[in-house]
Length: 146
Ligand code: DQA
Image (cartoon, rainbow, N blue to C red; front, side, top):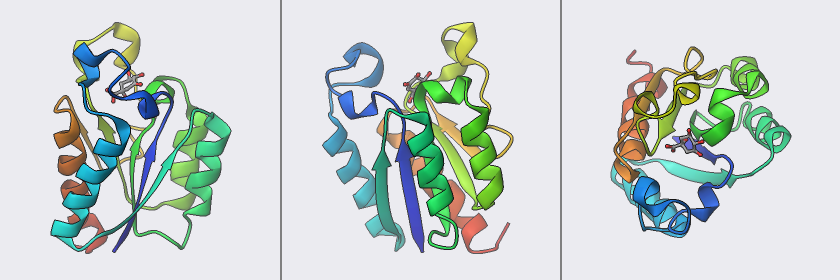
């Protein structure tokens, strides 16, 4: 079972970036947290982080026939990018949307998610734990149980 974890703009600044919102742990700590989750669930993870919308689109399209699932935190592109949503539609790989914060309880402009309809589920508001919830929530879709 291979899952591609995609993280959008500024998530590589975790620990420095608005720690009161996103926490004090850094991006490498997030990756090792996800690695642990994957080890516990027999998943082979791969990671991609970019601050560029087109590069995220390319990463999604390159996943075609290579990955069983995608866990994506599109960060600010969540609220703006039809291109990322369309790329997920194009490859039709089961995907989970994830956010560290609860985007429904923040500014109004964060309440819109263009990827929501394309994803099987959305986990948010639990910091790193959101990634665990998203990954484990996606598993039944990859095993054709759902
Ligand atoms: C985020 C929420 C987004 O609104 C924001 O632009 C981010 C991070 C989150 O993980 O909580 O960059 O996706």
